[in-house]
Length: 220
Image (tube, rainbow, N blue to C red; front, side, top):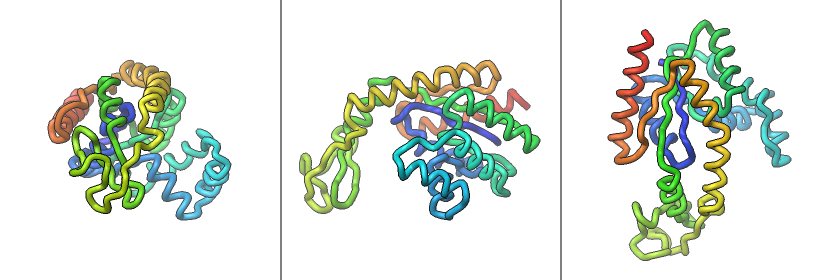
């Protein structure tokens, strides 16, 4: 099974990617993990990426693409993988298609986790973090025992800058601008399966597995 997971910030991609990869017995391949592995491992690509990151610049597509290509060529990905965070746009989707063609394979399914933007804002803007231990709470779903204070050390909780509503709305706009064409691209390719990413985690996983198996079965 070779799958790509797409969805906006706050859709639960990280959680579902971990669970689905385990269910399907394939490695989860995320761009964040790839970057960290290359930088900490001191690879040539990692050194190149670090130069840009140290300057506060975005890592160019060609470096990201090369890292992904190396990762997908590793032995554990030979039988399949679940990509999270790549591709982010149509250009990268074309690059991925070429990569897989070079490995004599192709994608089976692209799973889109769809969630209402107001729900995303509610999920993310409700998060509160402890500056001392790093524990994260949610004002609705996982509130501390004493409002505004960490259960573990009593420190005053704070809202991270990227959890503020205006920041979340901007991130959603960027996602929408980049990903709407990507979703349309994969729909035309006949690979797209879309599910609602709302409700308990187990229910979302159930929908995801049914969609993946249905799409893979239809394509076989």
